Length: 257
Image (tube, rainbow, N blue to C red; front, side, top):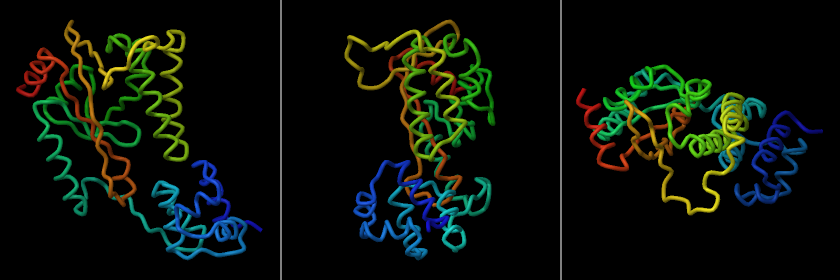
């Protein structure tokens, strides 16, 4: 008879579209043992639960649930970013975003709420009517806001929807991200594929409308690859770069303010 842990293991294996054999190879155990764990014929050790959670890329909060189902205490904490234990992390984040100046950099949580930004980033937020603690998801889903803000909105909205769905899939399903993706697709569904018949550019350029001008830019995304804290694992740092001299001049002006 399947146990609670066995059911969770099977569910996550299904979400990752892995067979018992594929999971066994990834975790370096036998497929027979995976089958026994799922049916309850074998009980996992704490090390095995952590090993399988890592192999399945289960988010840390859900790994705690797997540990609890197997009879072990939680292994992962969720610490506030302003806490004493997170001081080295705060310094690292500050180093990254301030070192990126005069170009804009933002710090987001799982649901794209703005946690921090450098000087240029704060200037961009002010231009959008946003501040710390506001959500870009809510902002982008306002009727007509994307079209007004971004010249190539169809292309950008499709890209963002795909990103949100990918993030949701990694988390095992996130209703907030799924709803945001669906909302973006609903805004541009009738406009078709903006790249059909042409070559894709090396990076997606976002053409922001600011102050009556259009400024092209692109971004990179950074996350903590060795994060063991639940909240820290969700933090992402987005850094923007200019695509032309006019955009670079705008960034420098914003940073100077």
